[in-house]
Image 1 (cartoon, protein in one colour):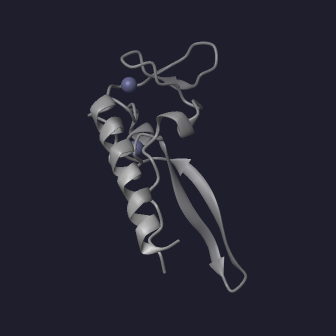
Image 2 (cartoon, rainbow, N blue to C red):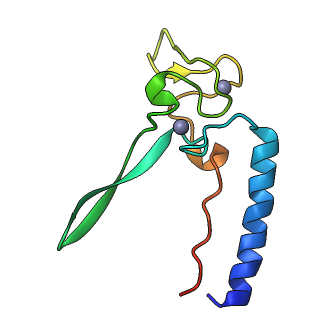
Image 3 (cartoon, rainbow, N blue to C red):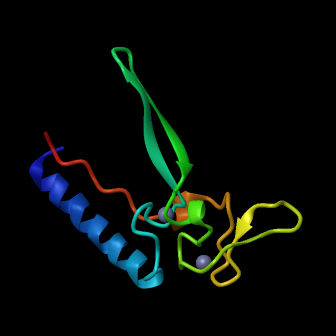
Length: 106
Ligand SMILES: [Zn+2]
Ligand SMILES: [Zn+2]
């Protein structure tokens, strides 16, 4: 990616971010509203693997990653859900979470 391409991608990213902020002004800053955070595991000479775990700030404490309201558990599935904004555990984070930042050119 060239510097110019990066600027274009970055601009698009910032627009997405602004839209996301406007829609979810109280989203969790730690995980970006995804409810999960990516952790690096087993970083050794052979490389490492990525894993996702529940965000300790929101889901881990029983709060909605998108609006910050307290989560209740669904009687049927026992999954956490938010009665305020409709977020449910296991909901595709791709559609709701914070857009990922583009990688700067090397
Ligand atoms: Zn979070
Ligand atoms: Zn919510």
